[in-house]
Length: 492
Image (cartoon, rainbow, N blue to C red; front, side, top):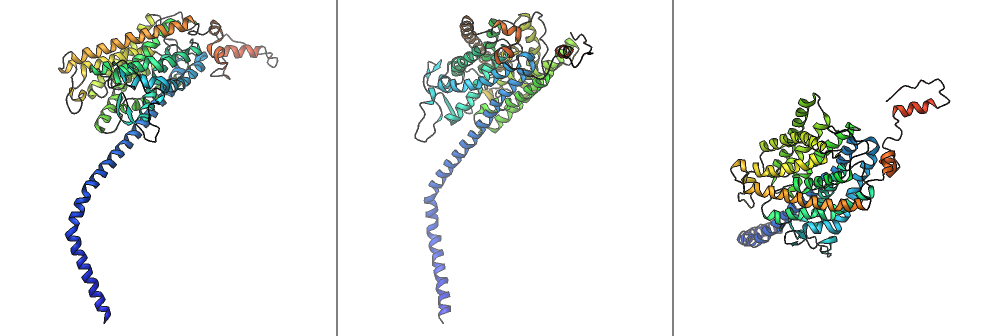
């Protein structure tokens, strides 16, 4: 008899509980809604920061990997007896830059601005909290990633500038001098230009100067420094004929280096979005980067074929790199058809620029000034002709169009002003820096190195220690008593 009663009691309790829940549940849910929405928003924000941080770091790793590309490109284009010197210079540059960037450069670039010209704090990253929290951005940057992530990404850019310079001076620069000028560039000359353009209070950026990923800021700074150094240091030993570059030592290495650089550029340009919030922009930048490089390679190769009748690999590589440098400023501000036009222009300038530097009798073994300087300036100015107002604006508001798209001379004028200002400052700074090194006999390696080879003199090494020139091999065989009947041929 008790069993049916217990079942009835359970049913009544369940019905009563359901009624209470039905009456009070809306109030409970309504009371919880604000907290739930707030926590969801905070979770979404933290997730976005995590994704952006991962994106910026991964693209920063790609940019750092470009050091390998520069090393291989330089090794391939240099003479054999200067390859070890080129490799160690490319390797040591980021080692030096990371330290001076931490000590001085990052603060000069992204510290609190003094009149829009130079940063005044954040040296040694000393202003960051030590209580376990992580500050976002920097005094001069509103990037949506923490300061350490921004620091690393910008360091990878800084290392690129001094590496460009080593290529133009390769084969005759004093190694201690290379260490010194790389440190000075990473601490002062490059960060000052960064401050002008990319610091939120920089004077050039405040005027509307546009350089999305560094055609002027990175590439022309490295190139102007390079050409001043190459002029003051003089040509490599034995260079008496001008008009054509000496043959490359290893085109396989040069091609590998160029392809690594192209890959790294997909970090260089898309990574400069500093976040993944606008996926369409990332796609546009990536496509523009690829189109400009392809157009540059074809333009240079075909143009040189008309001149020489040969399909020249070196010019093809330089054309691709010229297209990449050219599109770096405007990759976020132009449409794909304009990226192709910029790439084609870069390819033609790659050929004509080499001719110009040869006529000036300045020895630039890797065509650093042509690729990074001439095309860095061209790409920056091209923004003033080809930019889309829908892409140059901020906060949903349209910006300025380029001259050819009905925008007048406003944007073009600012772009030209920026290119000239950066060139004048960089040339003056580089001339003083290299002149001091020259006076201290730290610019060019000792004359003895011209005789025995810089690899042997500076490093006591050879990139191919077990490979002999045929003439040397035959001469040694002639004097080997085990080969009394060997016939020596003329190998000159």
